[in-house]
Image (tube, rainbow, N blue to C red; front, side, top):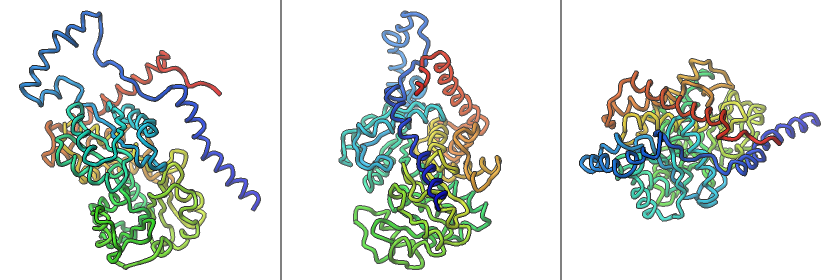
Length: 448
């Protein structure tokens, strides 16, 4: 027992190490992104082309044809990362200033992995209609909008309204991004355990933005909605549960899920379940380890709350789980949106898509799953890592082609053109970072 306690203590010490290092790095670099020119300045005379008087010509051309903004500006490779700071990671309503490190980090990942120029926009506004107005007002600058860390149910309405009223892709990463990577993990986990994912029993702990989106995408994989059991802080959703009238999506799932008509708490839901997908409250201890024993043999447990999973992966495995995954990079099987959003936006921007549909999310998930299969699946490898050089391009190609197929693209690029574009732009972004590090424009990481 003593050795086991020491082992768990060491694991916890390792799990907590990133916090201290992160604080030091943030203080040293004072953020993670900056604006760097993409056009040459050979002499100050060049400003007569980049600015006045020469800039009047592209302005007039855009005035005559608004779509030419994609030809003469960086709009086609720019997105806004928008948050009101009301639901940041697992930290809750911490406000827009405290949300800024997260949005900067998101922007860094967008650029490095997807070649996308992302601008953090943390807004001091919580009212839905005012948020809609603010995002619509800034939209002319951007080729897409990434909504992030916004409380539910407001996030559902904000996404739906902006999708309807803007002609550029609007994406809620906590919904669509999370659901997409979870879907990729589901596809490969069931492949590994040798069971049909359309016949399995799914337990989704947490019935917020992320898991409700997971449920929606599972249906597009032909999983019957009745095979899904959702559990929120009040217990299992069922057709007799009263759900707040302003949460239409949750009310829908209370009606169509849970064919067994289960009631009660998580303990009742997990009985004989094939998979538990937890996207709820940061742990540990939110999912008691003994509940994993109630699941089917060789069960699948995704505990994805940040910054600490609902159950430690070693606890889930010790109690019978064949495959575990979390949202963290320091454990095997990281199910993180970072594998999704850079490639999704790369593909959407390259074809100048007008929206991102759930079907695009599904093809992105399949592309991620397929890439992991090409490398070689195992219980500790169900999705690629962010180090994989091909996955972002594969996602971009899949999303871009689906946009073209659905008639949602302003540019109709072929597979080869999409691949070449994504490879070139992503490679350029990574080379820029490397060059700035080598020249110490980005100073080296300070030693302890």
